[in-house]
Image (cartoon, rainbow, N blue to C red; front, side, top):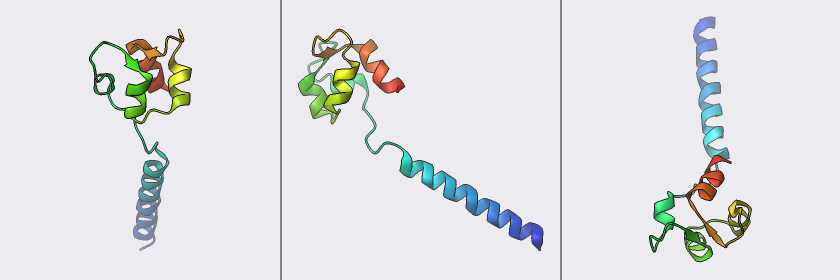
Length: 81
């Protein structure tokens, strides 16, 4: 009986941990580069980023060359964070 109780307790603990991890995950995950690049020019503009719900601070920190556009490499740095 004690082993059964321990197994149930362990199962509940694991389930709680998994549900907590899901709740702690970012609410807004960024879409694929191609989804944000609405005009298909190979860059994400400030306007496209805002339409895709990307935070301005995130955009500005990823814009390494400060050209007000993200290329695929710059966008990948956002995804890696």
